[in-house]
Image 1 (cartoon, one colour):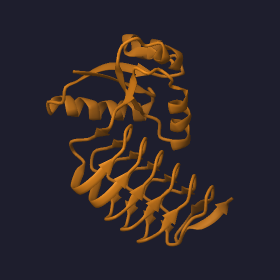
Image 2 (image 1 turned 135 degrees about the horizontal axis):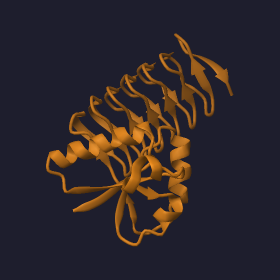
Image 3 (image 1 turned 180 degrees about the vertical axis):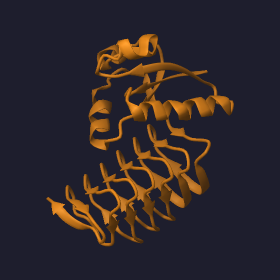
Image 4 (image 1 turned 30 degrees about the horizontal axis):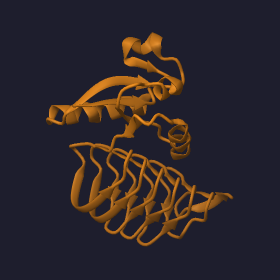
Length: 209
């Protein structure tokens, strides 16, 4: 039996708990302990609030953690602050996601219900694929990427580390988003996006470097 907890007690944390509960119902040997969060949530969560990052670093038993924070850069900061050798990182895939063929998923990554992944796809560590996103053939998603609900990646798309793709955005075949770039909600990206740039609109245009 794996004892598992969530770091991040906001809305996305509750959604990740739904994945854990779905997996438990499907027979996965998980025992959900509660939530860690740097904001004191004891009044709201009672005994389900396990403490802050210092409490996690002092946890004296093996524990699996899902970092349920939507922003990949913040997720990276949290992971870098976790120094407890008893912590490992849950790879959570909703039983209601569609996995078709040859999918690699790194540690700490989360795939939500309704996500549809086709074939020959590589997902790095601590990447989030949110509700009803579609990931086409031969896509590469590197570490700490954030794919929001309803995103569509056509084939051969590459997302470098820390990329954020907003809800309902579309990325056309063969396009590459460089490190820490951002695509706004509902945008359609038809050309590569440089590192640290933000693009919005249809077709997407850069608004920040």
